[in-house]
Length: 519
Image (cartoon, rainbow, N blue to C red; front, side, top):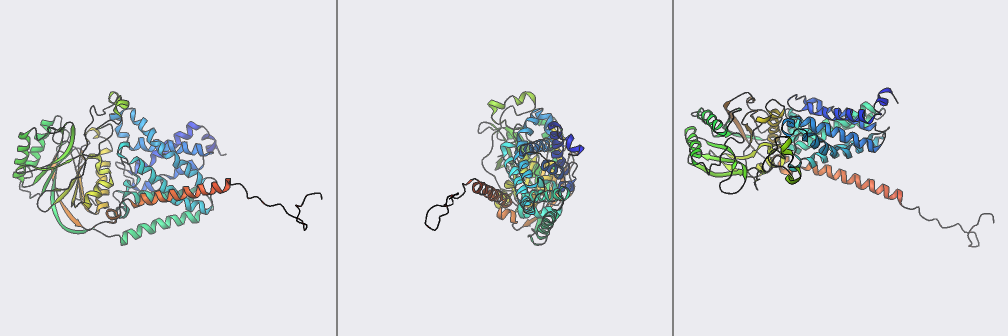
């Protein structure tokens, strides 16, 4: 054992190294946005796990690395959740424990070419299984999916139109596994290089042959970002002022951010009349977001509400997927104490039951989402299937202004646009606001967190159906199939090894009597 290996013999030192190695991929996401790092960031973690002396230790290395990744990815929640962020990190980090055992199973020692070839399929599939589980809304949703780090890379965005962000994640992990083999396993370069060549071939094929969205006209959409303003009345007044500045700019739709209206418009006709007057003055419908207790049913809702020159149009979307702890506390009877150590929701908000496509006039149909719903690929895909021409996300990250959260959130819209072949508008209260075309490329400039302004974007519309919209989450399904086939093969081999040896009949003499030694 070399000196470094001896140093790692301490479980605490090894766990610390695993935490740091697991956190390394976080730098590939905004705000650092070192997108290229994603293709090598898992190599130290994989190299550490494969050196584990036992499968149990490899599982601990996987768990510790998962903890580092989850806490690093969500570190900006610390002011809101306090120490509870470490509890969440430990719980979700446990998802990587089986993956750690898998890494050691395939790559420990001097693996054969067959084991390395299998690793290039099974290990990325295992990673996608983890991302699938933690994408459940009750566990926080798919924030920090590895493929999302490639939001500004054109070839990766083209892959997203084929298999969503999942396909990008799969290929990133495959590249990391191949590179880890090249670095740590002598004499096994052929399958590793073959894996890298296969990844390059898939990317090139997607770039050349995947269908591109066809541009079909355009629309002018304005976002209104008031900035950090205390109090719903003052914020509304600022939004009103900024919206009035849009008069005469020939816009088709005006989008306000999440929680832009702090009162139920059915209970405050004065506010709905003021918004309607703004709509008449600007010649465009206004999509606001109401965060208030409903007057027509019990509970607090976050709702995208469309207002035209004649008042409320009747189009309303109630947010379906709520932020755990931020908008509701799971199992409040058990975890309600979280309100005493952080800024967890004092009262659970209610969720809506279905997505809505709104007709805003000018022949334009939009699909609204609220806040972190833009992290869910299936929601934007269903809106595209239902005929939305433009995807809209209304967001607010005012609690995290000086963190990486605003840029991380804005970048997700690029993936959703590329996946669906539909442009997407990400409008926030306090920044970052952004617009992307149907290929996921940025339209105009971001509106930063220090801005209080309204801005008009010329958004190109597109037609056609991407392969991802047509076939859905097929990379996830394929990965689950790979894992199922591998597990079946493993169980089959163990069953054959544990089966009793067939009984051999005793040899007989020429006189048909059993042969007996010594006779």
